Length: 197
Image (tube, rainbow, N blue to C red; front, side, top):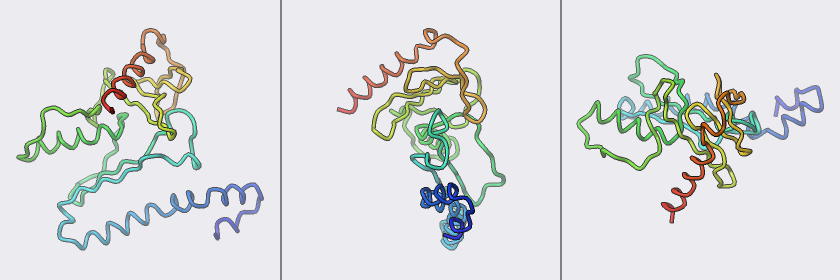
């Protein structure tokens, strides 16, 4: 309320009013997470708990509506015993989280984990030019028409883009036929439809 009333320019006031709920959420998220951890720290299980905080959709009303950035959501992993923070720079999806967690548990604890999963994901912290990244994106209307394949993004118009730093996009330097992105996406849709019946 105070932020909106302090705006001098009518266009700014209108912008703030139309995005009031999203802006409020963005402004207070850090405080709410901090308050949550402060409260949870009172429990005996606090030091043995790994917290996973993520979103399922970004907030396009506050940022990007086009390109790959429209799919960017936070993924925060936290445990009180961590010695330092780190940022993952590889391109990952929610599909990658379960595989990464299973791999971590299998490597560090005497747990039985399945040798094979049906997940499309790989490890979150992978690196290298030959990444086998495949991320199909489910739009808000329930269709899959965009995807990441390797270091490339195919948009709804089937245009292929190189993925740069900060999820920026540039026209692909390789030919469309060489990538066969449309074929990969169609094969995924067919397999997904068949397995979802």
